[in-house]
Amino acid sequence: MTRRTETVAIGNERVGGGTAPLLIGGPCVLEDVDTALEVGRRLGAAARAAGFGYVFKASFDKANRTSIRSYRGPGLEAGLRMLGEIRERLGVPVLSDIHTPDQAAPAAEVLDCLQIPAFLCRQTDLLVAAARTGRPVNIKKAQFMAPWDMAHAVAKVREAGGRGVLLTERGTVFGYNNLVVDMRSLPLLAEIGPPVIFDATHSVQLPGGGEGCSAGQRQFVAPLARAAVAAGVDGVFMEVHPDPDRARCDGPNSLTPDQAEALLRELAAIHRALTP
Image (cartoon, rainbow, N blue to C red; front, side, top):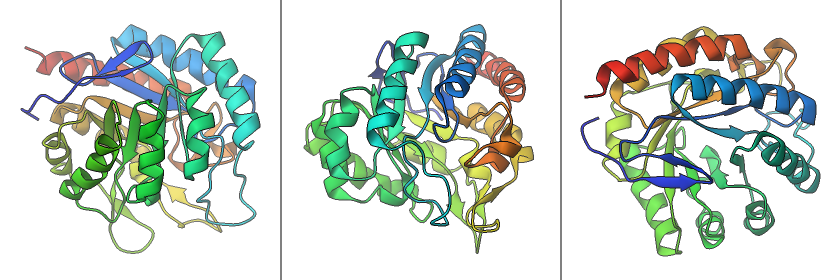
C-alpha cells in the first residue's frame, strides 16, 4: 500500500502513519485468567522482540456462536474484571468486542479499544455508542461487504465524535462455509484513511463448517499474514491458545504461542525488507 494511513493511539501504543506494525492477539474468548496471562506474556515478549507494538485481545462474550450450546465466555461483568486484571498485570492495552450499545460505556471503563464485530459493522446505534465513549474503535469488515463500503461505518463513528478508528479485514464470503481473502481489499481500505489490520486467523475460518461450530484451516494463517504484511498493512490480528485443539472457541484457526512467535519473526523480516 502506498498511501500512508492515519495514526491512532491505543493506550501506550500507536498504529498507522508509518509507525511500527501492531500485533493484536490473544485467545479468541476468555476462558480463565491464567490462560490469558500466559498467552499475553508470550505474545507481548514476541512482539517486542520483533519490533511490533502489542495489544491484548480476548472476548468476554461471543454472541454470534453457531450453536446455543457453544461456550460464549464469562460475560460482561466477569469478563471486564478479567480484562482489567490482565491490563494491570501485563502492562499492555486491552481490546474486546461489544455487541449491544449498552455495553459500550462499561466496556470503555476498562478497555483501551472497543471492537465492533464483523456481523455488526453496519449497526449505527452500536457504532455511535462506541464512538461516544472516546475510546478508539476497531471495526471489522463484514464478510459480505465491499471494502469501499466501510467508509460509511467510519463516517458513523467520526460524526458521533469518535477519536480514532481502525479497519480490520477478516475475509469475504466465498460460497457456503468458506471465506477467501482478496488482497486488493487492503489498499482499498487504506484509501478510507484509518489504519488497516489484517485478521490472519479469522480469515481462515470456515464459518459454520463444523458440527454446530465453525471449522478452520490454520495451515493458511502464515502465508496469508506474510502476504498482508508485504502488502503494507499497519498490523496483524491473531488468535493464539496454548492448546488450540482444546480451545473453547475458534481452535481450528488458532495458533500456538510457538507458532505465533515464529510467524512474528517472519513478518518482522518482511516489514524490514520493505521499510526504506
